[in-house]
Image 1 (tube, rainbow, N blue to C red):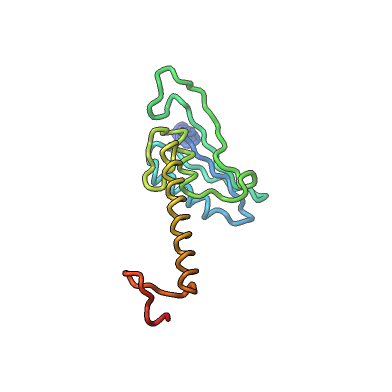
Image 2 (image 1 turned 60 degrees about the horizontal axis):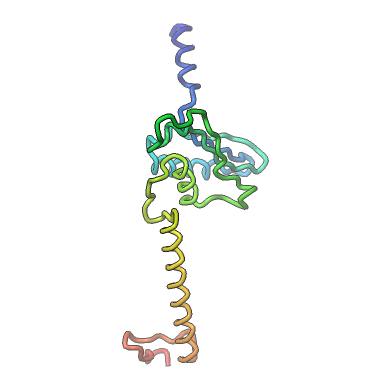
Length: 172
């Protein structure tokens, strides 16, 4: 291979493809598999909407997820949208108090790259998602309340009931 071909290959390999998700992880804490898992999940969800995922080894207990993108490249962007590169910190383990749930990380990426995209069953985005989540919580609270009433009236938590409401003979 000639020097010209080598330089061209190296230059092509070092160009950053946007949007870029950079996951910086602590090697001392052995968080490489976690970083790789999040990268895999983002690629499987967003496919070619993400230009590259970078896993960046570091030390000191760090685990951050950053996103670099051009708003002009975002799905549904208006003509003349900002073409400067934006760098956004999506997650910082120290600031957030732990690691992200996969769905939260996907939502944060989606909010920047494909704001109108629905992520499916795990998505609680916007007003409707919050409303559904609140209704679900209310239903769970009602069920718990009814269960407690049944336990108190039947005299114990281990009482099994038949579909018609009668007490199971084995549990009396």
